[in-house]
Image (tube, rainbow, N blue to C red):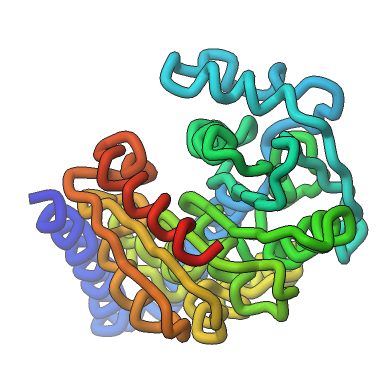
Length: 335
């Protein structure tokens, strides 16, 4: 029903604009036709600027001493509150990114362990609340845990969100710090949503042998595909040429392309074991992205797990038995 409504909206837009254009041509009202064309172009540009600003521009302040005061997340629900507060007791780590940003993260050491979980949070999760419970679970399994604030989030600098593209090199930097600290480190990457996309983009980079496997949960295939989906399904608008203009703005303002270094392209170069998880009721990063990503993954050791009844980023608590059975079995096999 909702899809039919969106389709009807698009057809109405096409019909009205086409009818006006035909009317102006038939009646030789060339000035009116030119005005309509200019208005349409201006609307496309305005919509594109709005979408890029709303989606990619940083909204929260940078706070380095206490992330608990950030943004609107003071009202954390009880399910994540304790885990978030636990995570925020970790030591603060710092690195300077390849393009000069100061990035920060939290490290929680498990004495005697040489296994490290690098957890990547999702879009606009300023306090990393979407990975806090999972990070605590990994810690309780006896692993060291590092959770970095992605550029444009939390304590890290950055005026924009890279949607997992440039973040891949930031993760490479955190990996190097761990290996320099512990040459015997055995590392796995875990990410949810945009963090899942970040894990996939990182998987295509040249990584040290210390990195043993990857786990991604409900990551999107590319910024292009995610923008396209939300323009069509969320706003009921034709995605082209709006998305082309969005990409031009992103490239000129933030320096990254919606196709280059996307999860879809990077995972084609992945060579280490890869566990992929998605909820079949996900309508934010649509479930239909899951199969093409799995098929694109070049790793000979890969597994796809669908969590039934789970919407976006719900899989780990919607069916924790299946979720953690799969994750723990994966880590036992490949670490």
